[in-house]
Image 1 (tube, rainbow, N blue to C red):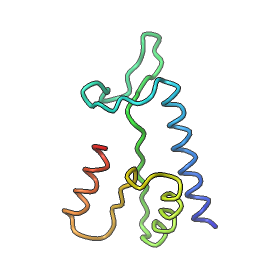
Image 2 (cartoon, helix red, strand yellow):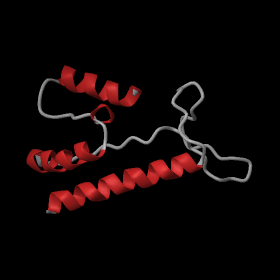
Image 3 (cartoon, helix red, strand yellow):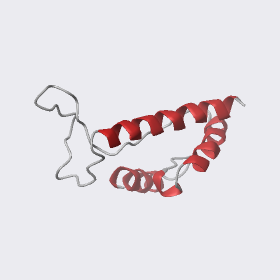
Image 4 (cartoon, rainbow, N blue to C red):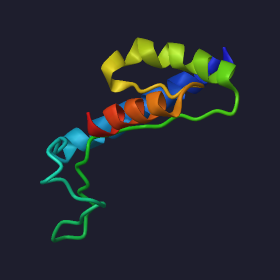
Length: 101
C-alpha cells in the first residue's frame, strides 16, 4: 500500500508537469532548438519546453521494484529506464537511451 501511494504521487507529479508543458506549447524534442536551462519569455515567464523526464532513486532495491511495478502500469515501457544492479556498461546504455529519447 505504501509503495502504491509513493508510485501514485510520482505518476501524478509527472502527469501534472506534462500537462503544464502542453499548456506552454508542448515539448521541443529536437535538442538543437531546446534551451539548455529554463528560458524566459519577454514578460519573464519561464518557458522551458524540454521533455519531462524523471529519475526515481531508492537505497532499497526491493522498494524501488515495488514502486516501479506501478509506474510501468502508468507509462509506456520505452519511457522508463531502469538502472539496477549490474554492469556499468548496461547502466550507461540504459541511461543514454533514457536521456536521448
